[in-house]
Amino acid sequence: MEHAYFRIGEVSQFTGVSKDTLHFYNKIGLLVPDYTDPDNQYRYYSLKNLWQLDIITTCRKLDIPLETIRKILSLKDNRQITKLLMEYRREAIRLSEYYRRVAEDILWYDGENERIESKKGATDICEKWLDEEIVIAGSFGKDARCYHANLQNAVKDELRHAPSIKRKYGYILDMDAIREGRFIKRREYLKMSDSSYAHIPPENLYKLPAGKYIVFTLQIKNEQADFKPLYDWTDKHDCEIDAVYAEELGLQLFPYLDDYYCEIKAHLKN
Image (cartoon, rainbow, N blue to C red):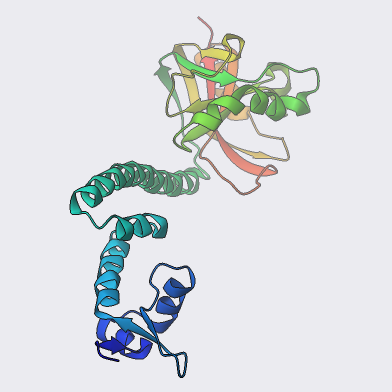
């Protein structure tokens, strides 16, 4: 061999790139040793290979995909390479924005579960003014058990386009049932962080009216709940309610249907 050639172990030692990685680059045709000894079939890397490996290592540190690196190696023109890298930069910015939102959503979900834990056992009941809100609501169904399926059908396109998981589920309750301690959901609704609701049919948009509400935390077990604090409050203050909404304290991904907490919002009749 008249030129300087190096065995794979030497290249690994020089560069810090593992032999397994070098074998992989060879296998996919990204970095093929320039010289094969005809006597023993050993493969050797040239100085050109070391230069190519330096380019590959630099690009990998930029998290550039292997196929893009293959194009960079084939171009051999810094202007064209810069143009290709600028295209990748735009994609990297798009991905960084995506992962920033993912990180925010994970932090939000952690906060949701902390909120649930902090509200368990709370007994405070108060009167609040709440502004009007537009929510996505499933249609009424004859079978009360269909409330969630009806909502999912209404919201499927909006969820598909939503950039965030941030959302809150709530229910419109059966007024007659609550005096008997039954938690019957006549309609389920959903609030999302983006409230434009561009993919929701008008019939599935529902207004939670502005006004005075009685607000408190309630535990629901097996669709049973103690609404006595609500009626004790209305009797004491000589007032009536005309609608009751229940909103889950936080988003939970694990099944919890037999024991969970809601914030009750009972709308005071004018």
